[in-house]
Structure formats: C-alpha cells, structure tokens
Amino acid sequence: MSTAPSLRIFGFPVDIRPGFVMLMALFVFLNPGEVGLWLAGCVGLFTLIHELGHAFAARATGAEASIALDFLAGYASFQPTRALKRWERAGISVAGPAVQIVLGIIVLAALGTSPFDVDHIRSTAPTLAVWWAGPIIGLVNLLPILPLDGGNIMMSGLDAIIPGRARTAMIYFSIAVTSGALVVLAFGNHAIGPYFLIFPLLTQLQMLQHRKTQTSLDRHGSWQQWAVSAERDAWTTGKPGAFPPGMNVSPWFRAAELARVGKLDEAARLLTDNFDANQSANWMPPDAASPEELAALVGLLPQPLPTGNAYSEYVLATALARLGQFDVAARYAADLYRRSPGTMPAVVVAQCAAALNDNELAVKWLQAAFASGTNLGALAQAIDELPEFVRLRDHPEVTILRSELSLSL
Image (cartoon, rainbow, N blue to C red; front, top):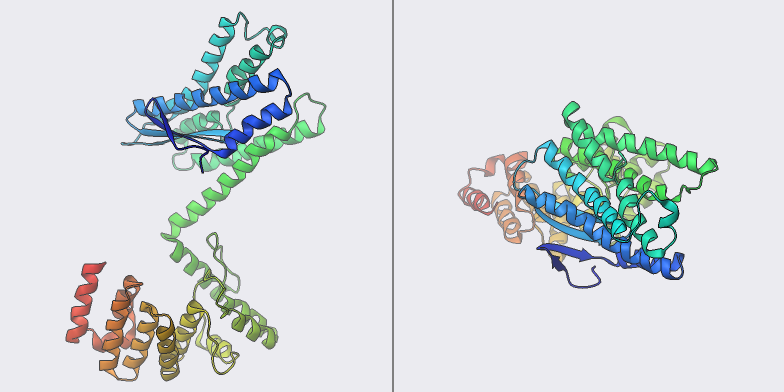
C-alpha cells in the first residue's frame, strides 16, 4: 500500500510506499541532528531524480514508465511498445545514475564545494548529504552487479555475446562478486562494513530463484503441467521432481512410501488426515501410480470412505473409477456433487455411468457438469479423451454439448 494516493510527476505515476518513509526515518534516527535531516531529504530527492532519469529515457523509446519508491530502493518500471535494442536498454539503465551524479556535482559546485575535496565536503551537513546522495550513491549504482544499474548495463552488452543466457550468467557473477566482497569486508580491517552488501546479496539470491522458476515454467508451459510432471517423476523414479513454488508431492505418494516400509497405520492416517476440510489443494492427483499401488492405498482407507475436503474426495473418486469400482465411485462422486456442486465430480459420475452402460444417465451428468461451469476446459478434455465416453461422442445431446463447449472456451 502507498502512504498516499498515487501522484504523477512529469506525467509519470509515482507510488511512495511505507518502506520509503521508513528509510527516511531511519536516516534521521541513525544520524541525530542536522546531518540526519539533510541525508533523509537529499537521499529521498536524489532517489526520485534517479528514477525520473530512467523514466524519461524509457519514454524517449516510446515506452510507458512508472516509478515506485520503497525501502532501500526505487524502481522505474516500463512497458515497451516495441522491441528495444540492446543499446536502448543500456541507455535506460545509464540514465538514472548519470542524472544523479551530474546533478549532485552541479549542486555541490553551486554550494562552492568540489566533489573531490573530501575535507570541505564533510565540513557541513548539506554538502555531505548532497555528496552521498548524489555522486557517491550514483557511482555505487554503476558497479557491474545486479540488481544495480551497472549490472543491467553489463547484461545488455553480455547479451550480444551469449544471447538468451546473459541474465543467468550475470546473476551467478553478481552472487560470486557480492559474496566475495562480503567475506573480504567481514574479515578484513576496512572502514566500510559488510552490512550494506547483505541486501543486494539477498536480492540476487531471489533473482536466481525466480530465474530457475521461470526456466522451469517455460519448459513445462504452465504451472499445472509443471506440477503434473514433478508428481509423475515421483511415481516413476521414486523421487519427487522439482515442484513449482507452493506445490508439493501428493499425500498419496508419501503414503505409498510409508506403506513400502511397512508403516501401514501411518500411511492410512496420512491419507485420512488429508480429507480435513482445511487442507489446501497444493498437490496433483496420483495419475502416474500403478493400479496395484493405487488399490493398496485405497484399501488402507476406512469405511465408510472419508469426506470433508472436496479436492481430496474428487481425487479418491477418480482413483476408484480408475480401479474399475464404478458403482462405488459414482455414488461417492454424486454425494460430493450434492454437497459441493462442480464440473469434475459430475464428470466422474458420468464416466462411471457410461462404464456401467447407462448412457442416458451419463449424458444427464455431462449436462450437469456443463451447467456447473466451474472447469469447462477439463470437461471438454474428458469427453474427448476418456475411453468410457467413446460411445457417447456421437450421441445427439453430447454433440450439442460439445458445440456449446466450443463456443464457451
């Protein structure tokens, strides 16, 4: 949240976040008296000027830019209206620190101080604050590591040499350089402490994790397919694959692991506990489990079958259908639909009815699945792929339903 409604400066939306106000207050707290007030004011002003430099450079390329001011950082985000050349992206990165450094030198000159006369600079609070907020922080921003502007400039050049891999290379390079500098400053007798490097290092590690996440997402095409692939790896290799953030291996696989070592009671309890209504659906169904593994796990469940969590009930219904227990699966899924109407429970009932040769009942449940409207893409896929629906695909009412699905998707 912003501390105030978004404002516009030179036409750019500027969002001042609570962290930025906290940073200004921190300067005042750590530097009592006149120096703290001047530092807070100058750092705040020069940070805004720095981001305006980026924003104006981005606007010059036709991009739309906006600014956010937060704790320890400002951000100028921009949306290009065309593919930008490498030199244009580098120019946008240069613009921020360049404006900051040049303007800082101009202000120091106006105050009668040379940016190279350290003793004179330190003699007054205003000159010291301008020196730090302008030339010094601007030059630090040009260091060739991410997330600093110098790192982005270097990355633009590196992209010409190793296109498509420059960002990953820069992230690893930045982590190595920052970690090395952190060690040198921590164990050496230096005037500069290592603490200011912790924030960029944490940011670099986050960038690395995000990069790995994006690479996996690009490889699999969607979060769901990524999770499905990782769950499949668990059943086929015995070790869960790398899941997308927030997703885990299914409780069915964890229960199977327990069952393999004879811990049947623990396996049964693990499966049953997952029917708690408060459990989150952060796992994928055990579609890659063999029928033998699936039957053994279903056999561990108490009778009557547990209820309470709609997702867990749906997964169990599909497992029962896969094992050929169509009558049990149909009754179980129908009860779930009665308590929590949705497309997928209705699909399971329709699948089981079709398997039991009750075509008219299957068609009615397919229509109920369509009427529920909660997952029409999965309904279309089920009609086209489940073998139980082969005989129904030419049914007049199913033909109409498939046409309606095509218009809805």
